[in-house]
Length: 158
Image (cartoon, rainbow, N blue to C red; front, side, top):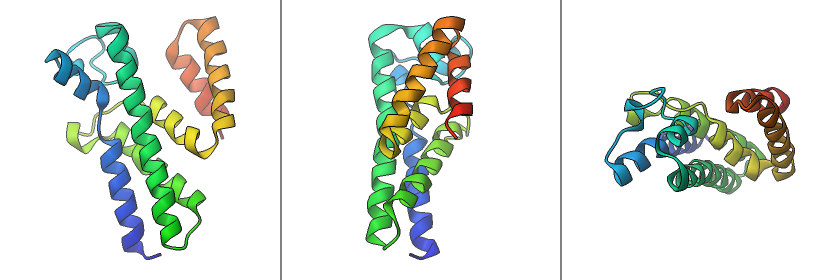
């Protein structure tokens, strides 16, 4: 595998991760930009608080799926180039996450990457994702703060 192959995978994963579905869904379905409402953040919590229910599920699915696709493509391409698919998953996942947090399409201002991280972990280690989900639900249930549940997971994942 050459540096060029690595760069192609990294760039593709980054561009895929840069798709901010909170912004896309709010603009396409409602004609509004989520960044002009609530906290001004393009994240899921602000989207839910601003627009509510069913569209939030669309954002969740799309943010998770973009990471799943990036990681699966990373695995595939790395294995085609004779490198372990495990390495490809992490490289593509990292760049998809960077794309989500610093999207080229939206002025490098993105979300915090919680759902994108979930999509990455779903492909790499689904059992770990279940444990993290349980931790998140416990922390959220006690505190009623999504951010605290996310922080607990971010700290415990490594």
